[in-house]
Image 1 (cartoon, rainbow, N blue to C red):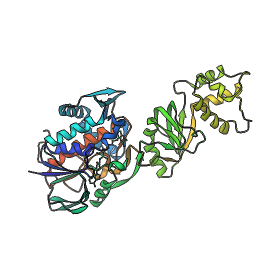
Image 2: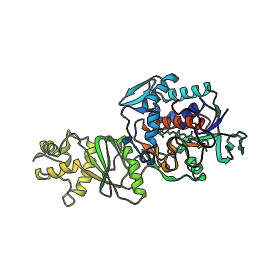
Image 3: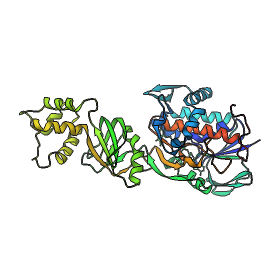
Image 4: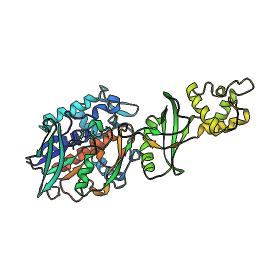
Length: 427
Ligand SMILES: Cc1cc2nc3c(=O)[nH]c(=O)nc-3n(C[C@H](O)[C@H](O)[C@H](O)COP(=O)(O)OP(=O)(O)OC[C@H]3O[C@@H](n4cnc5c(N)ncnc54)[C@H](O)[C@@H]3O)c2cc1C
């Protein structure tokens, strides 16, 4: 029987091993002692594994522009993944457009995958680091490091196909340390530099001198003064910059722009549900001769701590020559209304890989076929976050990990050593 090696027992690798086990004998390796170490941490321990309104617009990277995401999704759409989980015995429900296990614990998703792997007799090798992959004739040979005994050596098995699902570089403590890029380069594939995604933004702006302040906002990212994306939701003010899911969703684009030396600015609308004219009128309600301090105009509109942040910025940028305390006059209110609708923050960096939820960049689409095999290396497949595609927050990255894992595992177990599919494509 054909033999498939799957490297990495994360979301993508476990799914690849399940799919490959239908047509081949599968060995699954992970340097961790347990499977799904990152999966267990997802969605704050609840695992948001899919989204009801998924589209290509939720993703970026060369696997989108090369049509590879589209090809995988056409074969293994959202319903396929849901039916698969149901057939494994997972109950799930929808909250705020996200699919979660009914138990609201990520362990349920991990456990049903582990259960399925056991039933399918997938041979799991824990605490085993794959150091090297070589092609010898029609087969692949792995060099392994057994982390418990510190013994290194060539695996005795010869594999017809290998699926690399070793993740990107986000949250490296869970085991994803960029090994896929090394393997890919050793076979001549092209790799785009990895950057942190779904993380906070860093700003030197005077506004960010408070912590634990939250506000519903809408955001626009400007790169070299050009519109580069928008999002909305709850922004958290921290003393190093803006954070929160709506900020995370723009961080990958900011990281890429900053890497290429471009200027990044975040425009924040603090009252997106009101027009500028309405904000002007709201501010006017509290303005007048009885005002004793600047913040009176924000009474009932913003929390006191958020008002302080706005006040700091307003005094520096709008009224630098006025004495403190600044008591805005009626004629100032139009200016303040427009300020509140478009606060501009210079962005000078993003959080690092330790705080990132996903990796931006990775193995380029041009090096792959639509069934996720290396273009010039028959039998070598890739899946999950190691590829150059990253999604928004909300179940999009796990959908990619599961669907690409299934696609790569299935194709790997059904392709002969010369790279031709010997199975019925419509099966
Ligand atoms: C805190 C956090 C919360 C998240 N929440 C969500 C969420 O709710 N919804 C969502 O859609 N996405 C979420 N994500 C993103 C999502 O979890 C990842 O995109 C996805 O799990 C990636 O799966 P993967 O299998 O490609 O990689 P990983 O899960 O990183 O798995 C890679 C595996 O390969 C192993 N490995 C690496 N190198 C080797 C080697 N050389 N030899 C052997 N083994 C190796 C690692 O130990 C690891 O187990 C979250 C991420 C984080 C960090």
